[in-house]
Length: 221
Ligand code: C5P
Image (cartoon, rainbow, N blue to C red; front, side, top):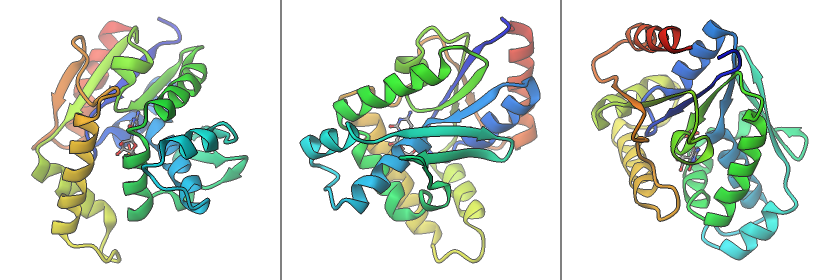
């Protein structure tokens, strides 16, 4: 396949973004982080004073919102109504808000349409929660990256760096909450597609996970 679609799904903190970024660079593909789109929309809702549970208001807001991803070697730039908000979508408040706005079926339907359009021509590694199950059920290759809750919290804690005012307990609580919401929502809950390659990265280094995935991709493309 010249212009494949590779789906990477899994819970927060499993290493999806890092793996997707390296994989895309290795095979000359574009890396698209769909979580950043939900985050950008949550930021806009927050700025407009719209509650995360107000489905009707969120749907109306979506109708006048443009969100685009620009892949770069360092990660995705996210444009909200044409303005770069990449630096504003990673804080704890937006993270929680993204998790909550993403349960609404109308918001998901809108995002899925945008994501299909972005990946339509192939040549992409698309990363999220529902890529292999909903966005591209016919993806050329699907990975489901998982890790124990402890390993995922630990990674997030290390990423936050020493400057961050977060405790390991707060991080693990936040991950657990988001996970449960993703796994239990009615609309496209987080789960591995039946034909996904499931990789548990607990106890593996990034290089080990990448080697395994690159091996599979090389064989199948
Ligand atoms: O991947 P990331 O942590 O940036 O995603 C933020 C939130 O967006 C997740 O907690 C999840 O609830 C939601 N999300 C989603 N579907 C996707 C990507 C992200 O529901 N494809």
